[in-house]
Length: 319
Image 1 (spheres, one colour):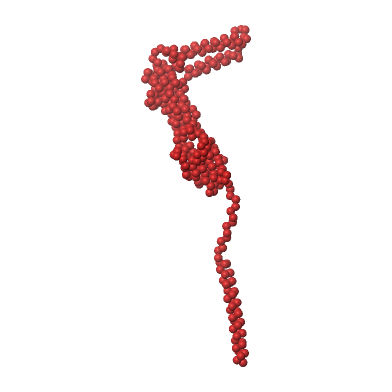
Image 2 (cartoon, rainbow, N blue to C red):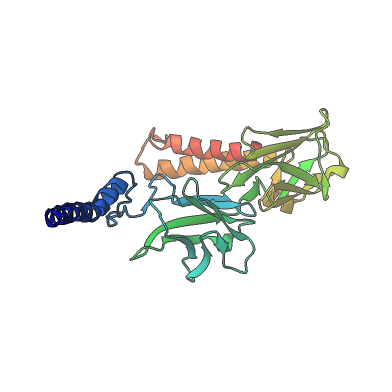
């Protein structure tokens, strides 16, 4: 009886041990499975795919014209730049002017002014000179490099006074000077007249200055010229070459050399009228002799030519 009890006790203990052992073995799976369900799993990033290549903005102008001594701005807009850099290169000597926002030249007039937010990589050139005219390359550091060429033209406008370099006027006659600005990409900021290096100002009576809209032409009129009005007159537009004219106010007879060499406001008009009449007679005679007209009359086809020549000369010397 006692032996049976001991045997039953061993069996019960053995079963409990097996169950406990099985529970312990399965416990890690439960705990691990439970912890995985509540944990955030970070996935591996996908392999990098193909990226868009850099592209230049085709709407950006490639031809820039600026007046000498002003500031030139070369614009280069690049899309999809990524981690690449933009450089400016002067084409004539392949000199690298800038890389990114850094300027690499001893010429302090050049400066890189990038606007990274808009993708516009500007190159600024202050006090532009005519020698700066040429090609400038905006280059992206792709493989192979991508380049867009900009053409810069720096012009120096020229003032031109009609009837220069000399004009002769009679005492008491008006002095009428006209100045135009040639080869200017934009109207000058101002245009001044000088007489004997002193600026001329309109007084509303004897002296008047009229500048046409746009500022590229100006007219100076001095009424009833006196001997003091003789001298050098200068037309000086902003950022342009000046032009000069010497005005002679004559108080006596006009020398023949002056009549042959320059314009006269009143004393020479009779001279030029006579010249026009003589020229017209000459043309009429020439046409009559070579037109085959037997009646001594100028042909209707040739007569307008003589009239046009006469009117052209009269207009030039009377205006």
